[in-house]
Amino acid sequence: MGVRADRLSLAGRAVFVTGPAKGMGRAVTLALAEAGADLILAGRDTEAIGPVAEAVAALGRSSTIQACDITDDAQVAAAVVDGTAALSGRLDGLVTIAGTTGPGGKKLWEHTVADYRDVFDVNVLGTVLPMRHVLPRLVAQGHGSVVTIGGTFGFKGVREASLYGATKWALRGITKSAALEAGAAGVRVNMVSPGGVDGPRLTRQLSESAIRDGIAPEEAYDRFRRTTALGRMSQDADVAAAVLFLLSDAARNITGQDLLVDGGTVI
Image (tube, rainbow, N blue to C red):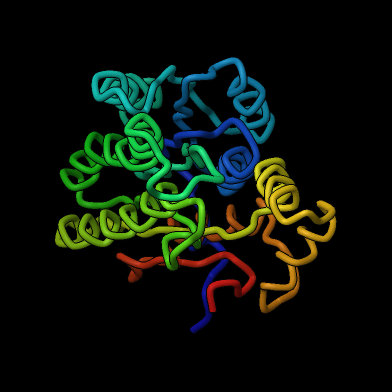
């Protein structure tokens, strides 16, 4: 028996998304809307989220924008309550996209306590708090799916990005533990780990690498591309497709997994 196309549908479901405004976040948000989901769009920069909400509406779906600092427990709690109420009490999933790379170009011992708190607060606490307030609702209703966003740096050591990499390792453990804790209620928790997603962030990182290595940015880009088995960079749409799959019924028996979307870099 084949996989029916409707098993990838999110029709009638509501999903809470952090970091929906730019790049990968926008691509994921619109992919979910195209699949039929209504959306709670949470973030600090509500002005940047506005055009995404308009694009969601153009796809015939509903959304609500919730101003929210994902590192503030009270604000996250309010965003979940108010956002769910705005969508008639529905909440079926969570995608935690918001994150930061933190300061790069430093060895571990060169980082300050402020550096540590900045990147761990956003990447780790900023994932845990939405899970803390969404998961009890999903567990109580006996269904739902959570997708966290990790990264290839959570599968290896990385020079001069130790704190950022450590947050991705932490998120892998949190995701797997939450999957064990919520699984008995029929709630799935998985991670998508992108690597080398083409866009402004990667361009900036490769430009910084080129300066450090004394090479042209184009050479740094090509050098990175050649590290992938497929010989190409990941695109926002690749990440969005993976998130959609894990949220959908097509992944009904998948939980606690890390899905690498990296063109085969880590292997």
